[in-house]
Image (cartoon, rainbow over the protein chains, first blue to last red):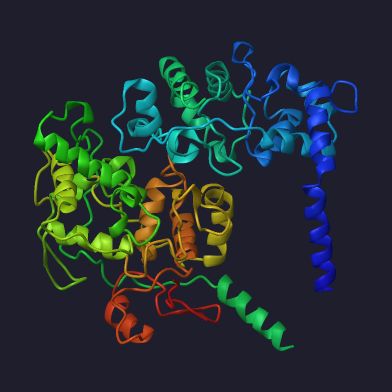
Amino acid sequence: MRAFKHLIYGGLLAAAISPAMADDGEKIYKQGGSQPGALACVTCHMPDGKGMDAGGFPKIAGDSAVYLSKQIHDFKKGLRENAIMLPIASALTEEEIKAVTQYMSSLDKVQVPEITRAKTPEGLGEQLAIRGDWSRSIPECVACHGPGGVGVGDTFPPLAGQGAKYLAAQLHAWQQGTRKNDQNDLMGHIARSLTEEEIIAVADYFAGLGK
Amino acid sequence: MKKLLVSIFALTAISTAIAAPIAMEDQSQLKPAPSKAESEQYHLPPLEADLPDNAFGVMVRKGHAIFVDTKRQVPELVGNGLNCVNCHLDQGRLANSAPMWGAYTMYPAYRKKNDKVNTYAERIQGCFQFSMDGTPPAADSETMTALTTFSYWLATGAPSGVKTPGSGYPDVAQPEGGYDIANGKNIYAEQCAVCHSADGLGQKVGENYVFPPLWGKSSFNWGAGMHRINTAASFIKANMPLGKGGTLSDKEAWDVAAFMNSHERPQDPRLVEGDIEKTRVKFHANDGVNLYGETVNGVLIGQGVK
């Protein structure tokens, strides 16, 4: 029985990393999914996955596949309201979501310089990033998103090298309740405490880190 | 049949709430901080931007760096994966998170933990031996000078020898009927696992922890103050989840603290003759509420992990 179980797990693992799936992911990314409405990701997220911030389209290259998959599901569920992504996310099959997020995750991620909390912050953006403002219960961004905003695990996405317009838009979405897909309002309550000036400063700061 | 009996026993054991009196607080001379009057402000430490550009300022910055980035700055002194700032939030500045301005002004003080009057340097050495599971810096080392100077600077203008509001962690009374480890497990899954991970071992980026391990070989050892359920409950209630302090009920804080401190961690470095029971009697029996040397669900707690 145990040997059988191992066989099944082994088989699943092999399937998960089989070249066929990676090819599928790349195909979906570049040409779209099987159903109408599942538009090609490449149009907005670009061939290298670095996005196009002028249009607010985020970098997805090298992000956790689990994180990306959750976002696509959350667009479908309306936990992230987005007129462009809702129809696309809804048109992707489960298999396609799995394949395409694995492909996105395999793209080269941005290189993030090592910035520790020992640094003396320069400017408002860096002040919030590595010091926070505990008088308003705002933790340091890096306390959850990692040093330099490199991202941690499958839950806390990278901020470094992400588009400034996109980052600011997410903080606004949390303020307005059009994005509410965080656990226990951990991000929402912070976003609601930030001023407009702070949102712009911290978005610019992380956008400027890592290329 | 035997298996079934064991399971039933385990179920009974974890569903029974455990009540124990708090026999003794470690720093017996240091009474709990008075609560703050509505009109009163917590001590405001000076601003980083106002640090003087001289030798004193350089030493404060060095102490700050060690405080927020301990593992990387003084790797030879840290035996686990923790940094000072894990238990003293906001770079040691935050009220009710055992701020350094609250600690600095209360030493020298008598501590039952080692039955003598301790200097501030000796108190910091205790942190390194237990909370950091490492090697205490010498009293005349630059590391100690830096940490002491940093603390002194934070305490600028604070009264000395008086417990000021916001120092330490505000005591949270044990809930009536005691604590419930099984319920703590549920609270942990709902509130804590997203950062500290489902297995409690924290999350790293590269070599360094972003979210500190709460138990296991890279966490604080069985001699650290945080191993007391009452101390951990007080820290958690005031400060966790990060940025959302004060949102758990007293009972939730106690339950999840008990769940955390029912897991193994590095052995108490004061282990007496290699014997857990002797160590329990000497160092843990009168040290707040803790599970060292107790048996929970048929397992002896306090065996240590390497």
